[in-house]
Amino acid sequence: MKICVAGLGLIGGSICMALKRAGYSVAGWNRSQKAAAFALENSIIDGIAVSFENYDVVFVALPPEATVKFINSNTFADGAVVADICGVKQYITKEVNSRPRNFSYVGCHPMAGKEVIGIENACADLFDRASMVITSDSSTDARALDAVRVLTRDMGFKYIVECTAEVHDRKIAYTSQLAHVVSNAYVKDGELNGCIGFTGGSFQDMTRIAGVDEYVWASLYLNNSSNLSEKIGNLICSLQKIKDCIDGGNYSRLCSVLREGREVFDSGRKTAALPEISVTKIK
Image (cartoon, rainbow, N blue to C red; front, side, top):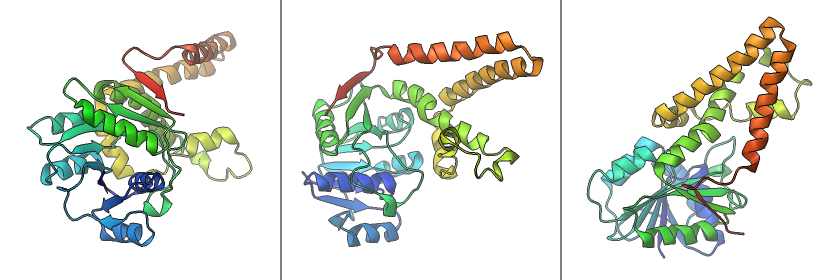
């Protein structure tokens, strides 16, 4: 199987390394030649791709708009599998399905990352305890889905989560994008300065993802705007309830609001998977 990864950042580079660890030969391509040269020199890839007609599988590890531009401006082999790894899926799926294609598209989203970016921070074991979300619909080719499942397993992922692009974007607005929004807002308080010695695990958890690339995340937010806006609105309402209790000195009401959150959390941990989501444990 001939594989190429387009986009040699942290995630793309880690895909290359995970696949090579599993015994695959992997070519790479990047918009910046510097990253491609680094990947080749450090044996992260086996060669630099100049075109994509000869690959059986092409992973596209680029931001949303760049992913669509890459797919629309390049030629792929008949029947090839083209799989993007963007953090939004409806936008990519709609754009890919907007015209006839000679390849089979599968949406992917590896649920793993670091606070740092760049090919120099890629690692072969980034996905070893992570989930790969794979999106599909009635038009998705079964053979392509199977190929991506096999590669997901071989890259070391622990779970495969399958759903539609719509379900993915709704869930990811809450589990990932909202968390990044909160972290970004949290560090803007002037009290951040001089916190050495006052921080514990909760502070580290809240601030860990505040320093992400604003250009990448702004694109992700805007391409999932309706879902994310709803989640931000829900959070604002919940915060306002707590603030009102604190401002009013209402101990019993504050306890009730906090208890509600604890009970919702406890209930959510016990809830079975939704019927529109399939979860497979690989190992």
